Image 1 (cartoon, helix red, strand yellow):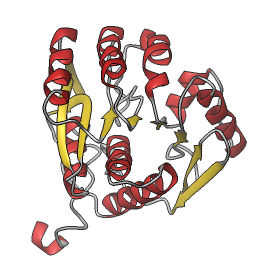
Image 2 (image 1 turned 30 degrees about the vertical axis):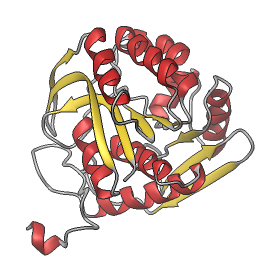
Image 3 (image 1 turned 180 degrees about the vertical axis):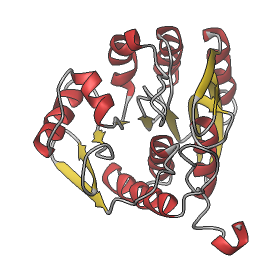
Image 4 (image 1 turned 120 degrees about the horizontal axis):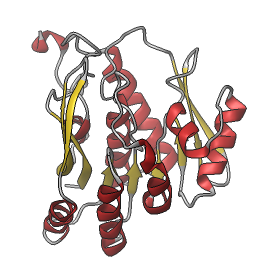
Length: 266
């Protein structure tokens, strides 16, 4: 069985973060492991508080995984502070995992900040060069590049700019744009476009976490980056189409929609 590690924050409501990552990995038939960098008290409607795990404990969790069950791929999500980033970057340099997918999480679905706004420079310097695939949405790509994104051409230019920062592949997600959900992958040589119909639902909590974990899972399973992204986007589209109307805000995706018939989940 292939093994995938998520390094991310914990969402106690189960829709995003480490919880969404592990559900996604299970749905793909890979063995999921986790390193928690922050404990987030959140639900579908709001983020109440965040408590970061100490850098030393982050490092020890990563050591515990790599000295025993070496992952075939690593997904990195929420890193709220430069101290978290430095700890994770040091361990990535030490262990050099083959596949690293990084979701540069900056905001929760409800708009609450999950990264210190002053930490973007540290993200670019310490974390981005380790990314085999980086998966920013449009607001995150704007923050990383300092460039407004209003069109497909803008998305492509942002992808080029981020690739030049040392990233292996850049997937700029178009979920915040109008029209169908169009994502752009740039591998330094060519662009790939992934388009799906936009689903009319507010229940999209954890979409970015789920997509990046699905990409990491597919890379671990042996697919190349373009196909891993294609398969991951199809999975997320299904999970959104069958999203769960739970909570008072943006409900979670249905991570096991392909495994359990809906009548069994009622």
